[in-house]
Length: 211
Image (cartoon, rainbow, N blue to C red; front, top):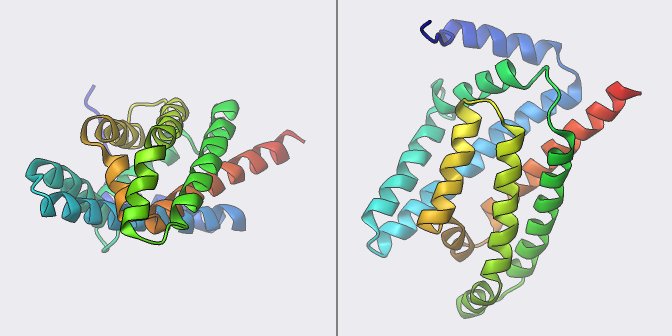
């Protein structure tokens, strides 16, 4: 049987329906979701420019392709952001996620935020480069753990799982994390903070439903 995807008017209807029936904390989660995509777009654009500046044309093209997909949902088009929203609504919104993995992801996010806070206190490019050289493997270990947990959380084949797999591959093959650390911490720290907050929101709502 051919796989069907919702038309643009159908996606609009479902999104409006979701936003007008959810509780305030869930509506806030949607605003976080949009901010998550905005930060990701900014970060991947900066990675593309960094790679291009050092002559890594293929790496720059990969990062720019991801940024272009993210931009489609930010400028009024339906694009990637809405595809991810539909994937979440269809496969996860009304199903129980792996609770232990969600909280494991929150723990990994907390550890990443501690590392990024330490990196953010460096005062020069040379200090930042020395910090990355000394701590990169530790940060990479935590980032890989977070990505593995997200793959467990997003267990259905779809946009969200494919996004996590694409990031995981780029971290492994293209040293995406090293590029991000070289650029500084602001966008990445904001992105990780939102992932942590969303995980905590899910855990809080799950506990409330169980009472």
